[in-house]
Every structure is written in C-alpha cells, then in structure tokens.
Image 1 (cartoon, one colour):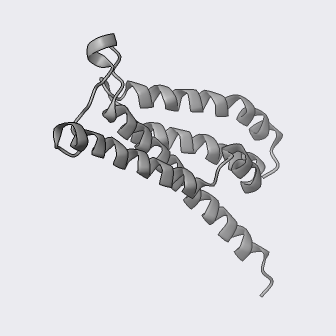
Image 2 (cartoon, rainbow, N blue to C red):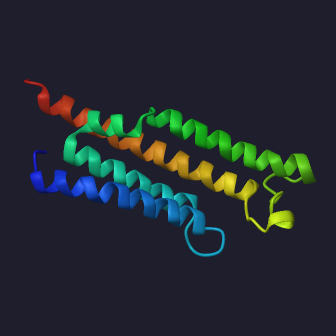
Length: 143
C-alpha cells in the first residue's frame, strides 16, 4: 500500500503502541493486562508497519525471525514454570527472590508473562507475514 498518510502515521504510532504494550505487560500482575494482551498490542505495531511499508520492512523492524521470537518466549515460559518446581516442587509456583529483600515484584511470574508476550508477538506476526506473502504469491500469478 502506498499511502503517505498511513506511512507517516506509522512512524508516530508504532513506538507509541509498543510502549503501551510494554505497559500493559508489566501492569498485568495487579490489574487487567499481562503477556497475552500486551503481545497482541505489540503484534499490532508490526502489523501496522507491514500494511504501511510491506512485509520486508516489517521483518527488518522486528530484527529477529518471528518464529525465533515465539520459540524464545516458549522457553521463557517453560523456565518460569520450572523455576517454581526447582524451588518449591510445584510447577508454575511463583518465586519472588527480590520481593522480600527489595520489595520488587520480579520473579518467575514476570518471566512467564514475558514469555507469553514474546510467544504471542512472534506467532501472530509469523501468521500475518505468511498470509501477506501468500496473498502476494496468489495475486502475482498469471493463470
């Protein structure tokens, strides 16, 4: 799509949407939000780039392959679950090593939420980019 308005708006909206997605991710401990909703917002930012400038530009903006991001997110989720199993013997039990000493709510639950965020961003972007590539392949054929 060659829209000057959409391309210009994308430059301003993409960082804003990504900041909001991180905010929603981090506030998910105490209020509505979390990794899934934050991940969907993050994927929207890259979908906006894809619609304004194309799939190649959106892939460059991601810097990593979407499926690699999703795989790393799944690894974070697994490690967050195993952390509780290693400390308390229960899979997915919350471990808060910095809460007692410093009052920071950083632990296995945050790692799990970050993993969900990355898995959602990677998976949704991989699907969107694949659909866009397939649409261009079908539209480009002369049968």
